[in-house]
Length: 514
Image (tube, rainbow, N blue to C red; front, side, top):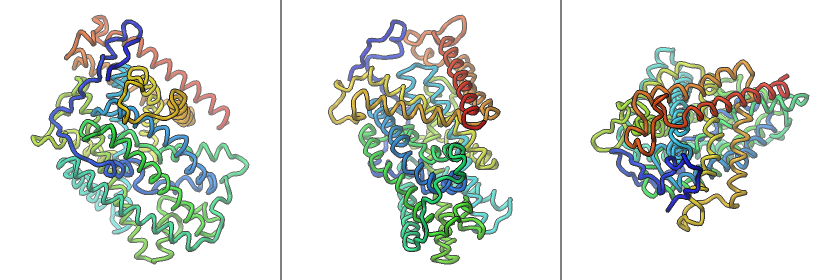
């Protein structure tokens, strides 16, 4: 499949006539079915409805259900379709890093890779923190005992990831089935005990509906994030371009239903007005409601234990898949001489980039000591930045590899140019709105996190040489700066984008937050 090379002079080096081979070093190919990929997606994005409990008292039960029903169409579907098309064209190890590098060059590719890496290294700690919290409730552990549990869980799933990707998929599939069964039980128990209107009231504060949306949207967005992480391992899947697209078709409705149905059923089963008592500890504490409460109501203490075990399994399986996905993120940067070489080491059997796995294991222990909300507030910045960029990548790929020149069975977003532009606009618009909706004081941290990618690029490019080290003719270096030709202009554009986001943040604060 030949690329369309009708681009301005000076950009030809960024668009080779055919897609690069996408070396995956010494990592071996793994035969994972579309269903296996669907279950891995389920774990990367969802693994149960945990987290939605925080939305209900902030938004109101009706708005929560509306958010859960609308986001699959205006957010999750566009993101998943954009990822599926990009992966069909370029099924490369590193996913969005490889796509951004191919379409917009080394600098923007590094930014996408950096955002992905930082997200994974930070967020992995959140799941270990939740495992520790759930286990301490189940076994009444003190701080030292909870840390030992965290250490054991990290050690266990580090070993699984070192064994290989197929083992990660098998555990993800097994845990996914158990989680779906238990949340299916919650739906049945809730419907049997239906006693109130789950949509009443719509807003937690009817006099301030926009405030309810502002307080809850970021968590709702976060609940439908992670689809692109499956592509980080695309270079290792057999027939990746087809199986990933098929996996999305299975996973997307499965994830949405696993959120909507249990939430609706449990809200309907609890007394009117009790929605104010929902929280992350629901069912485990007598004063807090949640999905576990329905198990306590129907099955007594044994139901609480069952749900706690599933809650622990849920966080473990998310951690398991993020460990696999994230361990490839800095690895691909290192392959392109944009990160230290030690991270690219692979075991002799080619099963795992073991240094990457071990570094994420270490970081997850560190970040698991942070408050869960703090972790999410940090990593959502990197997540939203990727989604703002994703649509531009796919639209550029459409120009480089026209649809009519692709194989007939290759996945393509329907609707022609209008379809891909609509999905790109939805992804960009919702991600930008959510990113800029935080208080102005908090947005300074957002600027710092985004700027970290530029600083890291300059440092690693100067130290390790980047793409110019292997192919200086196609990726020339500016002798004045030591960076790639045109990088000064790209960094200036990045600064303008961040300044624009800050201006939008101020405007949204004046409009919605007073």
